[in-house]
Image (cartoon, rainbow, N blue to C red; front, top):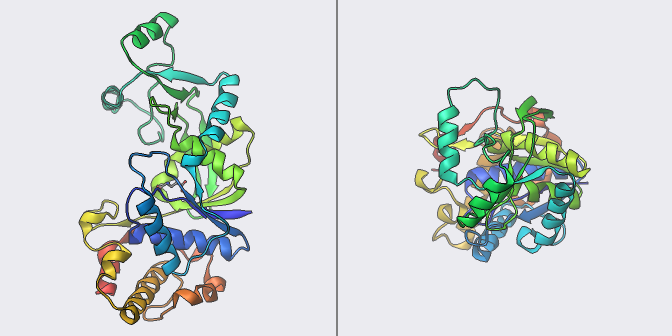
Amino acid sequence: MSGRFAPSPTGSLHLGNLRTALVAWFAARSSGRGFLVRMEDLDRVTSSPVHERAQLEDLASLGLDWDGPVLRQSERFERYRAALTQLDDLGVLYPCYCTRKEIRAEIAAAASAPHGLVADGAYRGTCRALSARQRSALQAAGRRPALRLRTADEPVGFVDELVGMVEGQVDDVVLARADGVPAYNLAVVVDDAAQQVTQVVRGDDLLSSTPRQIYLQRLLGLPTPSYLHVPLVLGPDGTRLAKRHGAVTLAELTAGLDPPHRAARLQMVLSVLAASLGLLDGGEMVEPADLSGLFDRFSPAVLPRGPVAWPDLAAQLA
Ligand code: GLU
C-alpha cells in the first residue's frame, strides 16, 4: 500500500513538479501509506544519472522522504516484455509502421470530424487492418514497427479524487516503440502493480492517459489504484511551467547562498508551495523537517482545483 512520485530524469525538477511531489507525499504519508520514488528513465538517450541525483536531492531538501531503494525503469525491460507477451497472447497487439509525421497529418486531417473526449495524440487506427502483404512490403522498405494496443475506442471512466468523474476514450496506444523501447503507458501500469501502488498522484497533464492505463490494468489482470491529478503550475503565457519562465528550479533559487541563507530560502520555497496547496495561511512558515506537522490539515478537499500562476508564486519568493 503505497503512493509514489515517478519523475523522468531528463532535466531539473521545477517548482511545479516539486509541488506535485509534495501533494503525492502528503497524500501517501498522511493516509499511512508508504511513499516510493520511481525513476522513469525508459529513454536512455534523454535520461541521465546526473538529473536523477539532482532530483532526489531536491526532494530530500524539501523534507520529502521515501521508502526503500529508488526503482529504475531502465532496469526492468524484462518485466515490460513479459507484459507485452501476455497482451500478445490475448491477441490485442498489432504492428504499426506509421511515422510521427504521418500520424500528425492524420490527426490534423480528422480534427474537424465529430468525436468525444479523445486522449492527447490519439491514433486513428491506420495500421489496424494491414494485410500480411502490406506488412511485408513495409518491412521490405526498411520500416520497423511500433506495437500498438488494439482497442474498440471504448470509453473508460474513473473517479479522480480531485477532479471527480472523468471519462475518456481509449485509443490504440503505443506499447513498444519502433526501436524496441517499452512505452510509458505500459511501464507505468506494470510498475504501479509490481510496487503495490494503491494511490497515484501526478500532474493533470496525464489525466487523458489514465483511461488508457486502467484499460491496460484490466487486460493484464492488475488492480486499479486511486487517482488524484494535480492542476499544473502555469507560466505567464498560460503554458505549463518551464525553464523559459525564469528561475524555476531549486538550484536557481538557491544559487550562491551560504548554508544558513540556503536553509532560509528552502524554508521559504516550501512554505510558499504549502500555502499554494491550502496547507498554510499566508505568512505562516514550515521547515522541511516539520512537514509531517501538517498532516492533519491535508485532504484532497483543501487542494485548489484550478491551475496556479507561476507569477503569483514567484512574487511571494521575491
Ligand atoms: N514520468 C512521468 C512524468 O515525469 C510521470 C508518470 C506518472 O506519474 O505516472 O511526467
